[in-house]
Amino acid sequence: MQRYTLLRINSINTLASKFFVEKNLYDKSYDEQLEVLKTNNFIHPGSWSKLLNKLEINSIDIIPNFELLQNKWKDTFYPNENLNYLETIHKQIEHYKPDVIFIYAGAFTDSFPRFMRNDIKKKFPFVKIITGLWGDHLLGSSYRENFSDLDFIFTNCIPLKKEFEKRGLKAFHLGNAFDPYVISDFKNYNKKRFKKKYDSIFSGESGYNKFDHIERFHFLKFLMHNTNLTVFAEEHETNKSIYAKFKNFNRINIIKILGKISETNLKNIMNMSDNFRFKRILNEAILSKKDNLFLKDNFKNEKSLKNLYPDRVNSLTYSIKDYYDNIKFSKITINIHREDPTDIGNIRVFEVTGLNSFLLTDKAKELKDYFKEGKHFIGYKDANDCVDKMNYFLKNEKERIEISNFASEHCLRYHTVKNRCEFVDEILSKQL
Picture 1: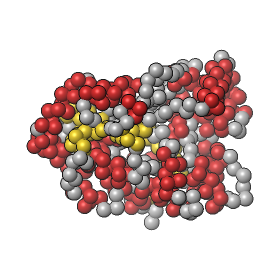
Picture 2 (picture 1 turned 90 degrees about the vertical axis):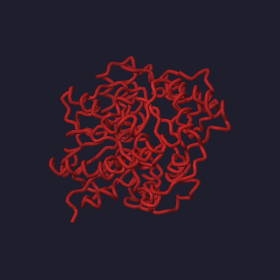
Picture 3 (picture 1 turned 45 degrees about the vertical axis):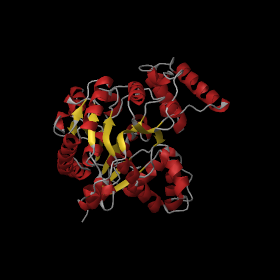
Picture 4 (picture 1 turned 180 degrees about the horizontal axis):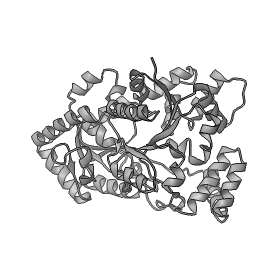
Protein backbone atom coordinates (compact mmCIF):
# COMPACT_ATOMS: atom_id res chain seq x y z
CA MET A 1 0.00 0.00 0.00
CA GLN A 2 1.38 3.39 -1.00
CA ARG A 3 1.78 5.72 1.95
CA TYR A 4 1.95 9.01 0.05
CA THR A 5 2.47 10.44 -3.46
CA LEU A 6 5.57 12.43 -4.40
CA LEU A 7 5.86 14.46 -7.59
CA ARG A 8 9.50 15.12 -8.48
CA ILE A 9 10.00 18.10 -10.78
CA ASN A 10 13.25 17.71 -12.67
CA SER A 11 15.18 19.42 -15.46
CA ILE A 12 17.10 18.00 -18.39
CA ASN A 13 19.99 19.14 -20.57
CA THR A 14 20.06 19.72 -24.32
CA LEU A 15 21.59 16.30 -25.03
CA ALA A 16 18.15 14.75 -24.51
CA SER A 17 16.79 16.20 -27.76
CA LYS A 18 19.73 14.73 -29.70
CA PHE A 19 19.16 11.42 -27.93
CA PHE A 20 15.49 11.42 -28.99
CA VAL A 21 16.54 11.83 -32.62
CA GLU A 22 19.26 9.17 -32.45
CA LYS A 23 16.98 6.60 -30.78
CA ASN A 24 13.87 7.57 -32.80
CA LEU A 25 11.74 7.98 -29.67
CA TYR A 26 9.13 10.40 -31.03
CA ASP A 27 6.52 7.73 -31.72
CA LYS A 28 6.90 6.04 -28.33
CA SER A 29 4.22 6.51 -25.69
CA TYR A 30 4.71 9.05 -22.91
CA ASP A 31 5.47 6.32 -20.36
CA GLU A 32 7.97 4.69 -22.71
CA GLN A 33 9.75 7.99 -23.38
CA LEU A 34 9.92 8.77 -19.67
CA GLU A 35 11.29 5.32 -18.87
CA VAL A 36 14.04 5.61 -21.49
CA LEU A 37 15.09 8.97 -20.05
CA LYS A 38 15.23 7.47 -16.55
CA THR A 39 17.15 4.34 -17.49
CA ASN A 40 19.71 6.48 -19.32
CA ASN A 41 19.99 8.85 -16.34
CA PHE A 42 18.87 11.95 -18.24
CA ILE A 43 16.45 12.30 -15.34
CA HIS A 44 18.96 12.22 -12.55
CA PRO A 45 19.19 9.99 -10.60
CA GLY A 46 17.39 7.56 -12.88
CA SER A 47 16.50 5.01 -10.21
CA TRP A 48 15.00 7.58 -7.80
CA SER A 49 11.31 6.79 -8.37
CA LYS A 50 11.92 3.05 -8.68
CA LEU A 51 13.62 3.00 -5.26
CA LEU A 52 10.99 5.22 -3.63
CA ASN A 53 8.26 2.98 -5.01
CA LYS A 54 9.91 0.04 -3.22
CA LEU A 55 9.49 2.08 -0.03
CA GLU A 56 5.72 2.21 -0.71
CA ILE A 57 5.81 5.76 -2.06
CA ASN A 58 4.03 6.64 -5.29
CA SER A 59 6.87 8.61 -6.92
CA ILE A 60 6.24 10.35 -10.26
CA ASP A 61 8.68 12.34 -12.44
CA ILE A 62 7.94 15.30 -14.71
CA ILE A 63 10.37 17.45 -16.73
CA PRO A 64 8.80 20.85 -17.51
CA ASN A 65 11.80 22.20 -19.42
CA PHE A 66 11.74 19.31 -21.93
CA GLU A 67 9.10 20.45 -24.41
CA LEU A 68 9.04 17.23 -26.44
CA LEU A 69 8.05 15.17 -23.41
CA GLN A 70 5.61 17.75 -22.05
CA ASN A 71 3.82 17.90 -25.40
CA LYS A 72 3.55 14.11 -25.37
CA TRP A 73 2.05 14.29 -21.88
CA LYS A 74 -0.54 16.86 -22.99
CA ASP A 75 -1.44 14.84 -26.09
CA THR A 76 -1.83 11.73 -23.93
CA PHE A 77 -3.88 13.08 -21.04
CA TYR A 78 -5.46 16.35 -22.25
CA PRO A 79 -5.43 16.29 -26.08
CA ASN A 80 -8.20 18.88 -26.45
CA GLU A 81 -6.70 21.54 -24.18
CA ASN A 82 -4.31 24.26 -25.32
CA LEU A 83 -2.00 24.57 -22.30
CA ASN A 84 0.99 26.89 -21.96
CA TYR A 85 4.15 26.05 -20.01
CA LEU A 86 2.91 26.92 -16.51
CA GLU A 87 -0.63 25.66 -17.14
CA THR A 88 0.83 22.27 -18.06
CA ILE A 89 2.71 22.04 -14.75
CA HIS A 90 -0.44 23.02 -12.86
CA LYS A 91 -2.40 20.43 -14.82
CA GLN A 92 0.18 17.79 -13.90
CA ILE A 93 -0.07 18.72 -10.21
CA GLU A 94 -3.86 18.55 -10.44
CA HIS A 95 -3.67 15.24 -12.33
CA TYR A 96 -1.31 13.40 -9.96
CA LYS A 97 -2.48 15.07 -6.71
CA PRO A 98 0.84 14.71 -4.86
CA ASP A 99 1.19 15.01 -1.10
CA VAL A 100 4.76 16.16 -1.70
CA ILE A 101 6.28 18.27 -4.47
CA PHE A 102 10.02 17.62 -4.65
CA ILE A 103 12.00 20.03 -6.87
CA TYR A 104 15.28 18.45 -7.91
CA ALA A 105 18.46 20.56 -8.14
CA GLY A 106 18.59 22.56 -11.39
CA ALA A 107 14.79 22.40 -11.74
CA PHE A 108 14.64 25.21 -9.15
CA THR A 109 15.93 27.55 -11.87
CA ASP A 110 15.54 25.67 -15.18
CA SER A 111 12.04 24.22 -14.82
CA PHE A 112 10.11 25.67 -11.91
CA PRO A 113 11.73 28.89 -10.61
CA ARG A 114 10.50 30.88 -7.61
CA PHE A 115 8.32 33.31 -9.59
CA MET A 116 6.32 30.36 -10.93
CA ARG A 117 5.71 28.72 -7.56
CA ASN A 118 3.43 31.35 -6.02
CA ASP A 119 0.44 30.09 -4.03
CA ILE A 120 0.89 26.41 -4.97
CA LYS A 121 -0.68 25.20 -1.72
CA LYS A 122 -3.61 27.60 -2.09
CA LYS A 123 -4.24 26.42 -5.64
CA PHE A 124 -3.74 22.76 -4.72
CA PRO A 125 -4.70 22.20 -1.05
CA PHE A 126 -3.86 18.47 -1.26
CA VAL A 127 -0.15 19.43 -1.45
CA LYS A 128 1.16 19.15 2.10
CA ILE A 129 4.91 19.66 1.58
CA ILE A 130 6.98 21.55 -1.00
CA THR A 131 10.67 20.73 -0.78
CA GLY A 132 13.62 19.71 -2.93
CA LEU A 133 17.37 19.25 -3.24
CA TRP A 134 19.65 22.21 -3.90
CA GLY A 135 23.40 22.25 -4.53
CA ASP A 136 23.88 24.42 -7.61
CA HIS A 137 25.26 27.89 -8.25
CA LEU A 138 22.84 30.54 -6.93
CA LEU A 139 22.69 33.47 -9.32
CA GLY A 140 21.86 36.96 -8.15
CA SER A 141 19.05 36.73 -5.62
CA SER A 142 19.30 35.50 -2.04
CA TYR A 143 18.49 32.12 -0.50
CA ARG A 144 15.38 33.57 1.13
CA GLU A 145 14.11 35.00 -2.17
CA ASN A 146 14.61 31.69 -3.96
CA PHE A 147 13.52 29.18 -1.33
CA SER A 148 11.26 30.87 1.24
CA ASP A 149 8.18 29.18 -0.26
CA LEU A 150 9.49 25.73 0.74
CA ASP A 151 8.62 23.91 3.94
CA PHE A 152 12.27 22.85 4.16
CA ILE A 153 15.09 21.92 1.81
CA PHE A 154 17.66 19.16 1.38
CA THR A 155 21.24 20.20 0.56
CA ASN A 156 24.20 18.68 -1.24
CA CYS A 157 26.61 19.41 1.62
CA ILE A 158 26.75 20.49 5.27
CA PRO A 159 28.16 24.02 4.59
CA LEU A 160 25.15 24.75 2.36
CA LYS A 161 22.80 23.44 5.06
CA LYS A 162 24.38 25.97 7.44
CA GLU A 163 23.96 28.75 4.86
CA PHE A 164 20.23 28.07 4.71
CA GLU A 165 19.92 27.89 8.49
CA LYS A 166 21.71 31.26 8.90
CA ARG A 167 18.86 32.76 6.89
CA GLY A 168 16.18 31.11 9.01
CA LEU A 169 15.37 28.36 6.50
CA LYS A 170 14.93 24.77 7.65
CA ALA A 171 17.38 22.41 5.94
CA PHE A 172 18.57 18.80 6.00
CA HIS A 173 21.88 17.55 4.65
CA LEU A 174 21.25 14.86 2.03
CA GLY A 175 24.32 14.83 -0.22
CA ASN A 176 24.84 13.55 -3.73
CA ALA A 177 25.14 9.82 -4.36
CA PHE A 178 26.14 7.05 -6.76
CA ASP A 179 23.35 5.38 -8.72
CA PRO A 180 24.33 1.77 -9.53
CA TYR A 181 20.68 0.73 -9.85
CA VAL A 182 20.23 2.51 -13.17
CA ILE A 183 22.24 -0.42 -14.63
CA SER A 184 19.92 -3.45 -14.79
CA ASP A 185 22.62 -5.97 -13.80
CA PHE A 186 24.50 -3.60 -11.50
CA LYS A 187 25.73 -6.31 -9.10
CA ASN A 188 27.62 -8.16 -11.82
CA TYR A 189 28.59 -4.92 -13.53
CA ASN A 190 30.16 -3.45 -10.40
CA LYS A 191 32.16 -6.61 -9.70
CA LYS A 192 33.55 -6.77 -13.22
CA ARG A 193 37.13 -5.55 -13.61
CA PHE A 194 37.63 -3.66 -16.86
CA LYS A 195 40.89 -3.59 -18.78
CA LYS A 196 42.10 0.00 -18.55
CA LYS A 197 42.49 1.81 -21.86
CA TYR A 198 42.87 5.38 -20.60
CA ASP A 199 45.57 6.63 -18.26
CA SER A 200 43.31 9.45 -17.10
CA ILE A 201 40.00 11.00 -18.04
CA PHE A 202 37.75 13.92 -17.20
CA SER A 203 34.04 13.67 -18.00
CA GLY A 204 31.54 16.52 -17.68
CA GLU A 205 31.24 20.23 -18.41
CA SER A 206 34.60 21.49 -19.72
CA GLY A 207 33.72 24.99 -18.58
CA TYR A 208 33.90 26.49 -22.04
CA ASN A 209 31.44 29.40 -22.35
CA LYS A 210 30.14 28.72 -18.83
CA PHE A 211 30.34 31.66 -16.44
CA ASP A 212 30.41 29.39 -13.36
CA HIS A 213 33.13 27.05 -14.72
CA ILE A 214 35.78 29.54 -15.89
CA GLU A 215 38.58 28.21 -13.67
CA ARG A 216 37.72 24.62 -14.60
CA PHE A 217 38.26 25.38 -18.28
CA HIS A 218 41.73 26.84 -17.68
CA PHE A 219 42.63 23.98 -15.34
CA LEU A 220 41.69 21.38 -17.97
CA LYS A 221 43.54 23.34 -20.63
CA PHE A 222 46.70 23.11 -18.46
CA LEU A 223 46.24 19.35 -17.92
CA MET A 224 45.69 18.75 -21.63
CA HIS A 225 48.95 20.54 -22.39
CA ASN A 226 50.99 18.70 -19.73
CA THR A 227 49.50 15.16 -19.69
CA ASN A 228 47.76 12.71 -22.02
CA LEU A 229 44.39 13.36 -20.35
CA THR A 230 41.35 12.21 -22.34
CA VAL A 231 38.25 14.39 -22.03
CA PHE A 232 34.58 13.58 -22.52
CA ALA A 233 32.90 16.95 -22.43
CA GLU A 234 29.91 19.01 -23.30
CA GLU A 235 31.32 22.23 -24.71
CA HIS A 236 28.96 25.13 -25.27
CA GLU A 237 30.13 26.37 -28.62
CA THR A 238 28.72 29.81 -29.41
CA ASN A 239 26.46 29.67 -32.43
CA LYS A 240 28.21 31.64 -35.17
CA SER A 241 25.14 32.35 -37.31
CA ILE A 242 24.19 35.99 -37.79
CA TYR A 243 20.66 35.23 -36.60
CA ALA A 244 21.88 33.61 -33.35
CA LYS A 245 24.30 36.48 -32.65
CA PHE A 246 21.57 39.04 -33.31
CA LYS A 247 19.10 37.14 -31.11
CA ASN A 248 21.58 36.92 -28.21
CA PHE A 249 22.61 40.58 -28.67
CA ASN A 250 18.95 41.64 -28.44
CA ARG A 251 18.35 39.42 -25.38
CA ILE A 252 21.29 40.87 -23.46
CA ASN A 253 20.37 44.46 -24.31
CA ILE A 254 16.71 43.91 -23.38
CA ILE A 255 17.86 42.53 -20.01
CA LYS A 256 20.14 45.54 -19.49
CA ILE A 257 17.33 47.98 -20.36
CA LEU A 258 14.83 46.20 -18.12
CA GLY A 259 17.48 46.16 -15.39
CA LYS A 260 17.07 49.94 -15.10
CA ILE A 261 13.50 49.43 -13.84
CA SER A 262 13.12 48.98 -10.09
CA GLU A 263 12.93 45.42 -8.79
CA THR A 264 9.47 46.07 -7.34
CA ASN A 265 8.09 47.22 -10.68
CA LEU A 266 9.74 44.31 -12.52
CA LYS A 267 8.06 41.87 -10.13
CA ASN A 268 4.71 43.63 -10.60
CA ILE A 269 5.04 43.33 -14.40
CA MET A 270 5.97 39.66 -13.99
CA ASN A 271 2.87 38.96 -11.92
CA MET A 272 0.66 40.50 -14.62
CA SER A 273 2.06 38.32 -17.44
CA ASP A 274 1.18 34.73 -18.34
CA ASN A 275 3.98 34.43 -20.90
CA PHE A 276 6.69 32.12 -19.52
CA ARG A 277 9.48 33.36 -21.83
CA PHE A 278 8.72 36.99 -21.00
CA LYS A 279 8.68 36.12 -17.29
CA ARG A 280 12.12 34.48 -17.66
CA ILE A 281 13.55 37.62 -19.31
CA LEU A 282 12.09 39.76 -16.51
CA ASN A 283 13.55 37.39 -13.93
CA GLU A 284 16.99 37.61 -15.59
CA ALA A 285 16.71 41.40 -15.47
CA ILE A 286 16.11 41.18 -11.72
CA LEU A 287 19.09 38.84 -11.30
CA SER A 288 21.36 41.04 -13.44
CA LYS A 289 20.81 43.95 -11.03
CA LYS A 290 22.72 41.95 -8.41
CA ASP A 291 25.02 39.71 -10.45
CA ASN A 292 25.52 40.29 -14.18
CA LEU A 293 28.40 37.83 -14.57
CA PHE A 294 26.24 35.54 -16.72
CA LEU A 295 25.86 38.38 -19.29
CA LYS A 296 29.63 38.80 -19.81
CA ASP A 297 31.66 36.99 -22.47
CA ASN A 298 34.63 35.53 -20.59
CA PHE A 299 35.71 33.37 -23.54
CA LYS A 300 35.87 35.94 -26.33
CA ASN A 301 39.43 35.02 -27.35
CA GLU A 302 39.41 31.38 -26.21
CA LYS A 303 39.13 28.26 -28.34
CA SER A 304 37.28 25.21 -27.06
CA LEU A 305 39.22 22.19 -25.83
CA LYS A 306 37.83 20.22 -28.78
CA ASN A 307 39.27 22.81 -31.13
CA LEU A 308 42.65 22.74 -29.36
CA TYR A 309 42.92 18.96 -28.83
CA PRO A 310 40.61 17.26 -31.36
CA ASP A 311 42.18 13.80 -30.90
CA ARG A 312 41.68 13.69 -27.12
CA VAL A 313 38.39 15.53 -26.60
CA ASN A 314 35.22 13.51 -27.16
CA SER A 315 31.55 14.33 -26.88
CA LEU A 316 29.69 13.31 -23.76
CA THR A 317 28.05 9.93 -24.16
CA TYR A 318 24.25 9.61 -24.24
CA SER A 319 24.12 6.26 -22.47
CA ILE A 320 24.70 6.04 -18.72
CA LYS A 321 26.40 2.68 -19.26
CA ASP A 322 28.84 4.23 -21.75
CA TYR A 323 29.56 6.98 -19.22
CA TYR A 324 30.14 4.43 -16.46
CA ASP A 325 32.28 2.34 -18.83
CA ASN A 326 34.53 5.33 -19.53
CA ILE A 327 35.17 5.72 -15.80
CA LYS A 328 35.85 2.01 -15.36
CA PHE A 329 38.15 2.01 -18.42
CA SER A 330 40.29 4.74 -16.84
CA LYS A 331 43.16 4.29 -14.40
CA ILE A 332 42.58 7.77 -12.95
CA THR A 333 39.48 9.99 -13.10
CA ILE A 334 39.97 13.71 -12.51
CA ASN A 335 37.30 15.64 -10.64
CA ILE A 336 36.95 19.43 -10.54
CA HIS A 337 34.24 21.12 -8.48
CA ARG A 338 32.61 24.40 -9.51
CA GLU A 339 34.01 27.72 -8.33
CA ASP A 340 31.44 27.76 -5.54
CA PRO A 341 32.21 27.35 -1.81
CA THR A 342 29.10 25.21 -1.34
CA ASP A 343 29.83 22.83 -4.22
CA ILE A 344 31.32 20.02 -2.13
CA GLY A 345 30.93 16.37 -3.02
CA ASN A 346 29.68 16.73 -6.58
CA ILE A 347 28.15 13.73 -8.31
CA ARG A 348 31.45 12.61 -9.90
CA VAL A 349 32.98 12.03 -6.43
CA PHE A 350 30.42 9.30 -5.80
CA GLU A 351 30.32 7.88 -9.32
CA VAL A 352 34.09 7.45 -9.57
CA THR A 353 34.46 5.86 -6.14
CA GLY A 354 31.36 3.71 -6.59
CA LEU A 355 32.65 2.40 -9.91
CA ASN A 356 35.98 1.32 -8.43
CA SER A 357 38.01 3.88 -10.33
CA PHE A 358 40.72 6.04 -8.77
CA LEU A 359 39.53 9.51 -7.77
CA LEU A 360 41.93 12.46 -7.98
CA THR A 361 40.05 15.57 -6.89
CA ASP A 362 40.18 19.10 -5.56
CA LYS A 363 38.49 20.15 -2.27
CA ALA A 364 40.04 17.16 -0.51
CA LYS A 365 39.65 18.55 3.04
CA GLU A 366 36.02 19.48 2.44
CA LEU A 367 35.13 15.90 1.43
CA LYS A 368 35.76 14.60 4.96
CA ASP A 369 32.00 14.18 5.55
CA TYR A 370 31.92 11.44 2.90
CA PHE A 371 35.38 9.92 2.36
CA LYS A 372 38.81 9.77 3.95
CA GLU A 373 41.64 11.36 1.99
CA GLY A 374 44.48 8.93 1.38
CA LYS A 375 42.27 5.91 2.00
CA HIS A 376 39.38 6.46 -0.42
CA PHE A 377 40.78 9.13 -2.77
CA ILE A 378 43.72 11.46 -3.36
CA GLY A 379 43.43 15.23 -3.35
CA TYR A 380 45.45 17.81 -5.28
CA LYS A 381 46.19 21.44 -4.32
CA ASP A 382 46.61 22.99 -7.77
CA ALA A 383 47.22 22.10 -11.41
CA ASN A 384 50.93 21.35 -10.95
CA ASP A 385 50.20 19.14 -7.93
CA CYS A 386 47.52 17.36 -9.95
CA VAL A 387 50.01 16.56 -12.73
CA ASP A 388 52.58 15.29 -10.21
CA LYS A 389 50.04 12.98 -8.57
CA MET A 390 48.74 11.73 -11.90
CA ASN A 391 52.29 10.70 -12.80
CA TYR A 392 52.94 9.12 -9.38
CA PHE A 393 49.80 6.96 -9.29
CA LEU A 394 50.16 5.86 -12.89
CA LYS A 395 53.53 4.40 -11.87
CA ASN A 396 52.28 2.93 -8.55
CA GLU A 397 49.50 0.60 -9.65
CA LYS A 398 49.23 -1.46 -6.44
CA GLU A 399 48.67 1.64 -4.29
CA ARG A 400 46.20 3.04 -6.80
CA ILE A 401 44.12 -0.16 -6.91
CA GLU A 402 44.08 -0.50 -3.12
CA ILE A 403 42.64 3.01 -2.73
CA SER A 404 40.04 2.33 -5.44
CA ASN A 405 38.91 -0.88 -3.73
CA PHE A 406 38.50 0.79 -0.33
CA ALA A 407 36.58 3.66 -1.94
CA SER A 408 34.19 1.41 -3.83
CA GLU A 409 33.33 -0.65 -0.76
CA HIS A 410 32.70 2.50 1.29
CA CYS A 411 30.62 4.23 -1.38
CA LEU A 412 28.40 1.22 -2.07
CA ARG A 413 27.70 0.85 1.64
CA TYR A 414 26.97 4.46 2.57
CA HIS A 415 26.53 6.68 -0.49
CA THR A 416 24.10 5.20 -3.01
CA VAL A 417 20.79 6.63 -4.22
CA LYS A 418 19.11 3.93 -2.11
CA ASN A 419 20.72 5.42 1.02
CA ARG A 420 19.51 8.90 0.05
CA CYS A 421 15.96 7.77 -0.78
CA GLU A 422 15.67 6.08 2.60
CA PHE A 423 16.74 9.31 4.31
CA VAL A 424 14.31 11.43 2.28
CA ASP A 425 11.50 9.06 3.21
CA GLU A 426 12.50 9.19 6.88
CA ILE A 427 12.27 13.00 6.91
CA LEU A 428 9.09 13.24 4.85
CA SER A 429 7.30 10.59 6.90
CA LYS A 430 7.97 12.61 10.05
CA GLN A 431 6.81 15.87 8.48
CA LEU A 432 3.59 14.63 6.83
